[in-house]
Length: 327
Image (spheres, rainbow, N blue to C red):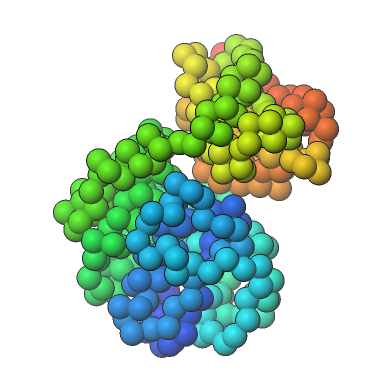
């Protein structure tokens, strides 16, 4: 999976340094949290000092992960570090952290929208999750993957592959997952905690979103207003995964979930079953992600944002129709 020169540069930087900071993008998901923890554990096994930070709090679903309390919630980084390891970011701005400018940075990313912004860049678009890259790095560093590390990495892989549903899953994905299980990750309680432990607030918000569910040909969309979020007593993290109800409709190939923010901007979560690269759509709007799962934030109001993104998706679908007709 890895490009030898890129991963070797990461290993060399780790070997030569002693103090590291590990961070990921703002509004962290399962891949970000699980990978931060596993990377920090790897560094500490190597006898390094490793601080783990996040601009935003750890979502409830991931607060049972081993050593999660070691992640410090802050919006500013101080202190001396030999290198800052950034996971799943296309720039230091994506972390939401102040104080990173001018530091030596290592960029480890697997997104289609990944960019070579750091001093060392290791980008693998074919990796199923950044956790799979941390897994490879750990093995090459000669570090023993403990049960705690395996649990964090398996959780990250499971969530970032959409429970092994997204495009790009291959035999290597299952080889990594199987090895993590052999090393102590227990798949049943991990999955049950992630998918059978939703707060009532998320179910209330889902009800609002489903009332707003619409479809048009191969496209579906749903939305919630900021007032819907407040009325449901929901948090931002309760929106995670709601778009899957739209993409799950038979015959729908691309879907979007729109969430109105307090300042009336609109957060978009895009999903595709494979033919449309939604990462390209998100990147044009200042976001990014995977070809099958991406996101961005655009200006409101909600009705205007809805028409804007639907117009782009209609164009994408029409392009597919035209290409099919020419074949």
